[in-house]
Image (cartoon, rainbow, N blue to C red; front, side):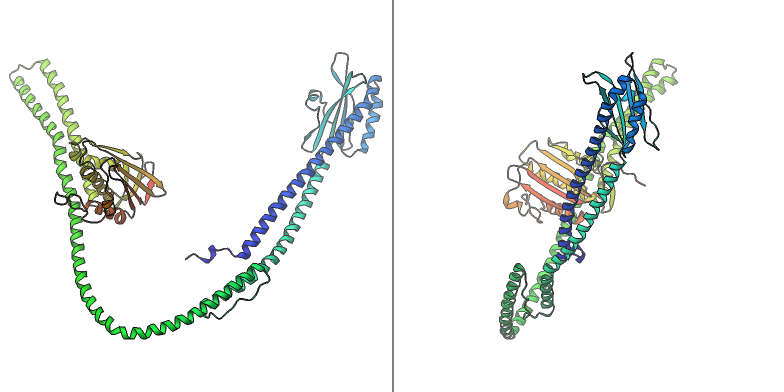
Amino acid sequence: MHAKSNFLSIKSLIIWVVMAITSLALLMATSINLYGQISSYRVQLINNVNIFSELISRNAVSTIEDELNFNEERNLSTLSASDILENVHIYRFVEDGKLEFFASYNKDGVAPVNAKFDRVDSLSEPTIDGSTVEMIREIKRDNGELLGYTYVRASADGLERLISRSIGIAVGVLLLSLLLCFLLTLKLQNTITAPIRNLAHLVQRISRHKDYSGRAKPSSIKELDILSDAFNAMMQRTQEHMQRQNEAEEEHRRLNISLEEKVTQRTLALKEANSELIQTLEKLHQFQRQMVQNEKMASLGDMVAGVAHEVNTPIGLGVTASTMMLDRLASMEKDFENKTLKASSLSKFIAEGQENLNIIYRNLNRAAELISSFKQVAVDQSSEIDRVFSFSKLMDEILLSMRPKLKSMKHVINIDCPEHLYIESKAGPINQIIINLIMNSIIHGFEHKDQGVINIKVALIADKKVSVLFTDDGSGIPEYLRKRIFDPFVTTKRGQGGSGLGMHLVYNLVTQALNGSISLNSEEGHGVEFTIVFPVKKATQSVPHLN
């Protein structure tokens, strides 16, 4: 049952939805309006600068031609009537084609600025930089001859004030609109939720007291009024049904009294039969557990039998090499005592000794590795304790333990497992599951096939979950057997050494020991596909740092 805090009320939902939509709409409208106003202010400021620069340039033509810079200074001083103009420069060309300073205007309280000879091209259009607007316009005669340039620097503080005021007004209107919308939304939600709340209280009262005589009041909202009428009709039918049910229960009670004696007699008989059945089931379960345990021990016994055969080879090679070494040592000792020992014989003995010692070392090391792997597999099969291990290394150890059975066959087993997948889980059940699935494919799937292919794909599919996909290209499983494949004592090798507990053991190990799930997909003649998914305590695809 979910906690009540997980539910939203209609009241809250209406307020949130209406306010969210209104806020979004108002925010978009306000943003668009602000953008338009700010753009308009910027355009107006740039136009004013353009107009001033055009007028100043036209008036400067005559003073530059007559070289009356004092007249131009006087003309520029009239610009003090403008609130935005801060600095104005008049540049003219001299005989060598260079620009020189002709006249200037600086607003009271504003520091002069350096000449902008090097920015004639970059300031050909009005440029807003922070709180100032700069522009340089050409001064030309009527015939198009270029006489010089006019540099105008204006203040953009007015633009910033207009922008700030517009933002303030927009924010105020937005907040006022949201407040008005919130009040209207409260009125709306109360109109909608009040009848629903009354209906909910009525339903709760009927649920607590089992009194179906209550009826919902009419509502001013058409849809809620229809709901109230339907609810009242349902209550009417429920009340009538409860009356009929009470009458039927009374009749049923009278019939029960007459049947009690017969039920008592049959109950006694069933108890005796159930007691015998329970005893039989307990014996059956005990026998089944014993068979499963025997199956585990048989698997472990087969592995131990294969250990001796697999380890005999490197040990035998080591014994052979050590025997040859002893024979050569006796020969060298004899030559030494007879004083017939040659340097070439000693050199040959040293070379052979090194080779034989390398053979003995390699094979004893190989035997130690085999015994270590077999020991780990044996410990895992008899252990139910969680440990951190490499899944890839576990698969290698499993295949190594099965080598005595597999090396005489041509079957191919492909392992697709991330090299650095480390998990914390029970290695023993995983070990037995893989061995049973492989042996099941060899015994049943490849019964009429000389060379089969088994693919085992291991992957970390989710946080702390591992997937094992086991497939083969064997004979598959018939439909009648597929439905019962995980049941105990189900086998096609009855009387041929098959116990029918292999897949049942796999199912129990997956679902109980690993707390996972296993599914089968197979068609006769098209192999099998087992999908195993189980959780793990820890999972990482890098080498873990162990304390």
